[in-house]
Image (cartoon, rainbow, N blue to C red; front, side):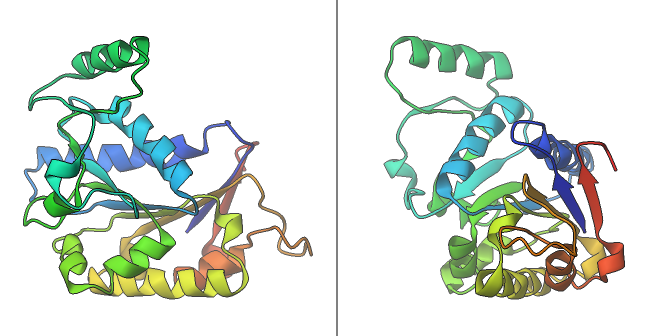
Length: 238
């Protein structure tokens, strides 16, 4: 497990996004069947939505599918709002459509063909996105409801990321640790088969007594590893 601790806007997301995208491209080149490769968990929907916009720009035209599953995710494909670009659209096509929407001040989302926008499609065989953005509450529901748990059929779960990990303390941290084990068990993955990453701008030393902190012990507990195997990366690169 790895803890990434750097200041806001310093590139924490790149630390896990680029390896995830690289793995997804590798799976694509190998012709592997659809299945979730990475689950990225956020404490707030606003953070997930911000990352969704980023993935649209990064993955448009790549063929790497992604989607966000939160409370507001449309149930049916017909309920999806915004502009859906046709299959085969390039990144430049997406960026042009996005610029035009912004210039018109419409505030309309532009969905590249790689984006899986509705629960209906995600729950279909072969409709699972490679990268799934969600929150703890929705992930809990996904592993509880039969109609949703099929979303993880064929999941390789190569990556599991918790953003703003300092929010997972106390009972919430214990629940998240149990959820990690359930998800990994359902996907048939051992602890050493999933790359686990946590990011935070507020990571302190294990001996610190600050309450707003995330410690290597939580990562070790959540991911069934020893504290000595938890690597902390900070802004100095150490």
